[in-house]
Amino acid sequence: MSALRFSSLIILFPILFAACGRSELIRIRMLAPVNEDKKDYAIFTDTKSSSTPVIINKQNGGSLYFLFKSIGLGYTTITTKMEKTDKNLKEETTLVTNFTDVAFGIGENYSFMWGAGVLSGGKMETSLDYGSNSFYPKNNYLGGHSIFFVLGHHGFGFETLLGYRTNFIKAEFEESDLPSTVGKTGKDFTYESNKISLTTSQVQLGIGFTF
Image (tube, rainbow, N blue to C red; front, side, top):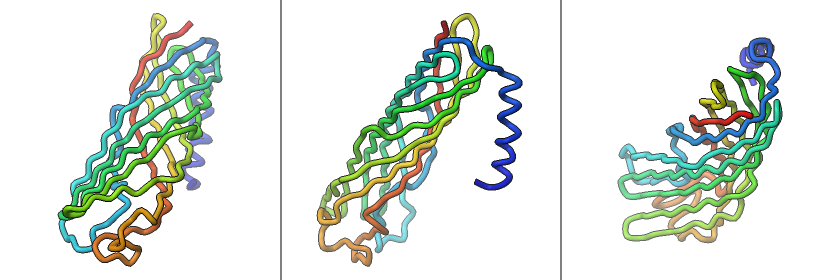
């Protein structure tokens, strides 16, 4: 973390604590992703193509949190469908990630919640179409963690919520499932490593109930 970002956090958190104060409410919060950062998550590269590929990312899922005053637990499931279509190669991946979250909150009418999650389940399925051939690399490892924050506005027992979540995913696939025409020095299409690091981020909207 850069010195500027660290200094900003040091300044920001005392301001939030002073402005919001400790929460005395019990809250149930539900959020859903409404926008996924558009990135090229593709694993494989067509070595013969000079065209610009088409990249599509779609997401769905949601988060559920229960906060007792200023601390709580949550569960998040996010499915991200990633597609990259090049001249000859089409790669599609479905990434399902389930996180167990710990959350902290401050504030009453205006609130701030932040926390972290650990990957507690999920799967990653990838398919490749190259010409008339199809391949399905097998995923044999999936792990990771996430961080998030949520801003809330409270009124008459309900809350409106705006959040942002970043997920750090590590995965690995079996190289033995790939055809002989593929390799790190590949002929038709190639890849850097069978160990993959992905960073996905979502903007979230939601509602909450207070007691």
